[in-house]
Length: 429
Image (cartoon, rainbow, N blue to C red):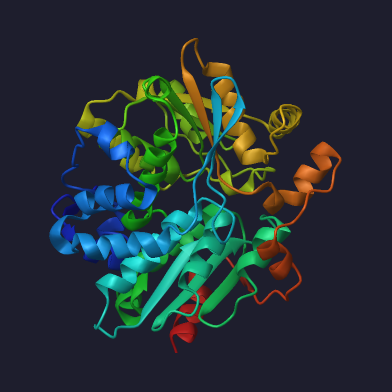
């Protein structure tokens, strides 16, 4: 499979190059030059999660990796389920938090780690993974790459703007995992990552790569759980399926739209955001007008300049889909809290990100349609918020409890690129 740089189309790379490189020239995102189409969707959905995902990813990757190699990568990466749960008649929750770090980022993070190991095997090169997180990416990437030979990971996160348990889950590992608390918001962290990729000498010096959803391997992995969700429904339900996606950096929605492009019969998608509503306002007015990032209780979505939006526009251009076919909605902290309460009264424990997707879904779902909203993290990752909303004391699963008792190993840093360069060179040694 060849991929091209959306900003500079003449730059074309293989899957392995895209995984190793992360970003193209001029901070351009890579996009598949061809998208396979699965015609016999019913037969594909009848397969188990691993074999189906292997077929999907093999079709995307092409002959660069054998089908046996891809199957091995998938088997190593997807060692946990993605179940759907009935919330009420015609409305399902897709639970993506059954992996080791209790968030949907485990799917993409682990597949990327396996892919990177496969395409750099026997090369002996040292790699520095630099990534920014608004909460969940950090843990997924840290645990996926922890202990891997010749790979150092540097994770930037906005100091004081992620939940304490999110922070503990990835800032307590040490070893080849280095965590940096940036004095700024998530967009400041993303900006530092982009500056690093624009520094050609630095990139070559330390073998720079990124594990954000700008890396195409992560997005490809996320396509698979949309198929898995549909496979758990009846044909009648999935033929009228509407999916609401809690959206921050918009990688999750990009993956869903790619699943639709591959043939999964999804009627429409809804982009649900918190107060950082750049995309809903853009879809309404046609004007791209990012505002300063606002801190919310759904902090993983506190992104005002979503990196993956150009991929969505590129896919819609290729497929001839109008952006006006995307549903959209913005939900305040107060409204998301109301939805957490509503879901709890229905017997479903949820946290603010999933509650935002649920709220917009139920507002826009029409008669005869099946609704699915994505639950991207375990409620315990936002224990303080959920406990306060519900006046309760939810249980903390083992992995969170274990890391919650450990010492933070992060260093603090101003949002200054020269200071970050010093950190990166020190880490690479």
